[in-house]
Length: 176
Length: 224
Image 1: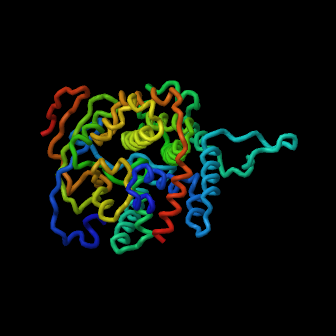
Image 2: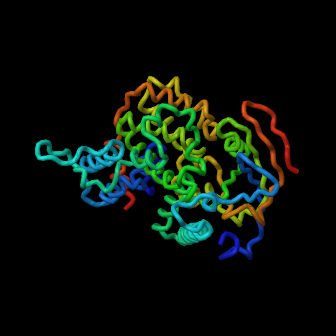
Image 3: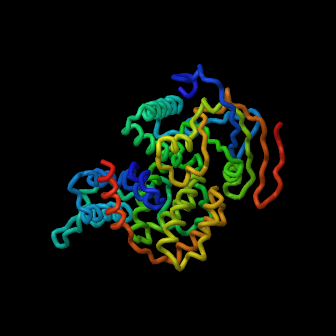
């Protein structure tokens, strides 16, 4: 799945640079999907995350094959995932620094913008998926979101971290 | 949301999303797909879904005072507003009174994930409420926006911007919708509270729900 299944391992890596805004950061932090931090009821978060990823991957594959029902369900699931943490098995990143910065500054307090390098084939490009299959995306489509499944790990690496402050103050490089 | 993808109008996209994905209106979405759909009936069904999910249940049935349809025992569950209030462990009045203290509260780990699910369906139902001119739905949307994470804030602020342009012309100057969406980032807290202030002045909304239902039915027939 996402780089290990059909068309996965054989594919050449497609380098991408992503940005992610978050409130806290340290060098040993496990940056993981919301479903691994927050589950509905008593599910095992790992099982629940894998279940969602399997379902979404299945929907993407079926959509690519032209299955209209899967396409409709994928559209609904993406909208739901982007509004509800317990439905989101991805580490959310953006192609745009400004988006990551606004997430980092949420609530008008300082935060961190992570610059992440990785492989475009190892995650889900929400905007590309939507535009390829004419899926409705409301305002969140403008977040230019890329989802890294489960957690930030190989082939994704944090290459730079900046501490950003609200009200136009200068950002400070804290890593490397 | 197939119909929402067909019509490029953003407001219509919100309408289609809400009708098709909200728990409260999914049966209506099914009804809309039938070949002999009546738009008047569809509007009435949508209004019932909006009202029964915004307001508290009517008193129990009594012979002296027969209830308005639907009776209490016909409800599938409590109104979404009540479910949400219970899920976040607060009271409805507090949601609108202490909003600065509640900024982004639903994104905290301490709030149960169940609250997010209810908030999602309530948000969609409130979109329909605002499209039907319901000012309580407008207020609930502002509460959901204040308490939401960045994604929810962006979605609701975009919707309110569109709704305001079309429906609340007197507030156009007060609501910085175009400023927010032109940057395409979630609004900052100052902007969110400007919205709340605008909403607290009880904007007069007009209903565009019937015309959207007619358009929806017509598009659906063209697709199929």
